[in-house]
Amino acid sequence: MRNPLITIILCLGLLPTNAQTHSHAGAQPLTYPNIAGYVTLKTDLHQHSVFSDGHVWPTIRVQEALRENLDAISLTEHLEYQPHKEDIPHPDRNRAYHLAVEEAVEHDLLIVPGSEITRSAPIGHSNAVFITDANELVHEDAKDAFATAKKQGAFVFWNHPAWFEQSPSGNPILSDFQQQLIKSGQMQGIEVINSVDYAEESLALALANNLTIMGTSDIHGLIDWDYTEKGNHRPITLVFAKEKSLPSLKEALFAGRTVAVYNDLLVGKAEFLKPLLQASIHVLKASYLPNTQVLQIELKNSTSSDLMFENAMDYTFYDISPVFVIPAGESKIVHIKTLEILGSFDLKLKALGAYTEPKVHPIIEWNVKIDRP
Ligand code: ZN
Image (cartoon, rainbow, N blue to C red; front, top):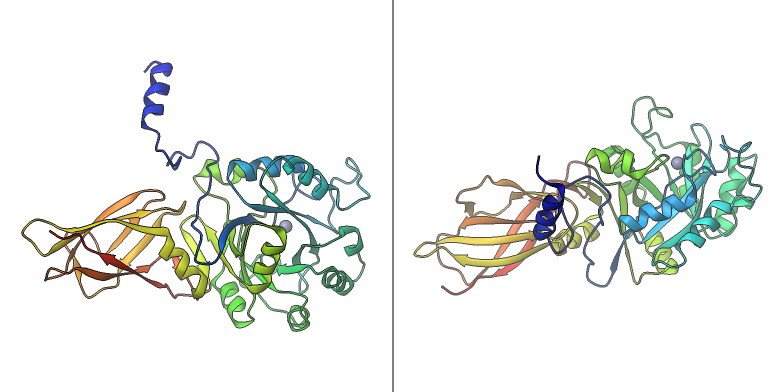
């Protein structure tokens, strides 16, 4: 066995400067680029603590978010399901939020006040975030809870629509109740990714009803145990906001400027997902191999997601598969047969891990200037 001290010294020497590594030993900071006109906020707006059916104190949620470099979180405790209430009595339903705010005060992490309105199907579970007082949302009749959320100016989204405990087919069923919520402006978003589940049918519902596309961890235990240790990142919603602030985050959610991300899966409306992917890949180098018309380009993936692409050009590749992956934070060399010497060209790749509609992958374009031989 190698001397552990020597191992540490060797490892330090090899650490990449941007802290992107492929070891999944612990939480890693998540990175996604800004897009034109907006800052990209990394958010997880569906989480639980011991103030409903979660297993940790709210401060742990803040520390987990800081370890992963998130910009905003919400503790959305079930209003109607409080299994620890006898051990932890809390007449004030805003308590988890206040503890998180206190913990985050020295940090650049936004804490969004939220609650989960919890009923059996056909009403289902929904998160109301940007509420002003969770206590007022406790109602016998679900209709009153949603009406109060609306009165408080909340952004409301439908949680895990495809959850088989509420829909045994594993497909979302949009109920009359929910249709009424959407029609009356009391529900504006939908989770297409909840914990490890992605439902294309939920994406179809989002697009058909102009709902904001959300991805959340719905964490009850520890992020490290449930996600990181298994080689996964927690699902998040990237929100394209005018600036990093609570009012801007709220405005962007109502405007539907989001992409849901889980590992190498990215789901969003084309107008946001395409510029995100465009900004995620940098062309580091482009030049011809000596005495050939074979172009060599180096592509760098600046995100925390492994990105899979397929060649979408008429030009073919020289020595790699038309389908290839650029691992998170890494770069890849691609050889393209352009048949003549070009000064520039449009690189076109289909993003196979990304969906703008069920079964539809966006094609992303980069104009590439080629170095003179
Ligand atoms: Zn929940």
